[in-house]
Image 1 (spheres, rainbow, N blue to C red):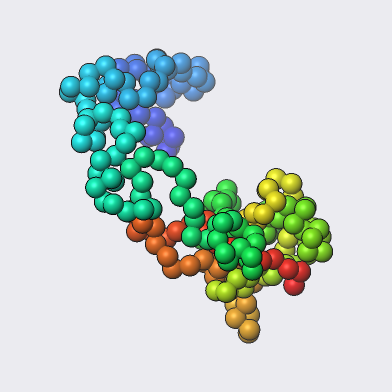
Image 2 (cartoon, rainbow, N blue to C red):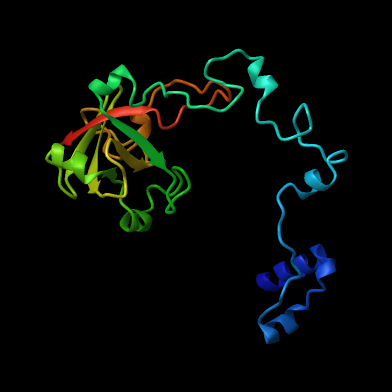
Length: 217
């Protein structure tokens, strides 16, 4: 039985716990593990000489000399607010006043399982929009809305909710691109609206930097 196999592997991996055999565990139905309060960076704190932090100084660094030496305006050596390329201060906000963000959902891993009909039934791809923003645009709960900017267009149902602040809209990340005959995405794929700009330090894709407008489709 696979459960018994996993338990025996656990016993071998944790001899200091003196775990009971599987038959005993089935009778007692529980085992109280020995545990102590977890202290983050305990070794580094107790013995910094032998357990330095992975920084040039071996300490926690509030100021990063490595970042400072890059002389990059978007990579500050001391943390502070850096305006987004497409944020509320951007001139583009006059045309596309809503900041689109995305979140990771519990019904799929990124785009994996997006086409699973059972999971689609549980959670449909929708655009979250605050009631204030929805009212300004004549949008009601469940209306199909057009999310657009200069890069692309998506059309999905609206979720009118106070759980997102005014000026910001959101959809779940990982939806597949499903264009119709006009090239309009019907799947709620945020990549249709995102830029190809990369982040300054990691050179990854720049999330949460999408200004859009939303209208009733």
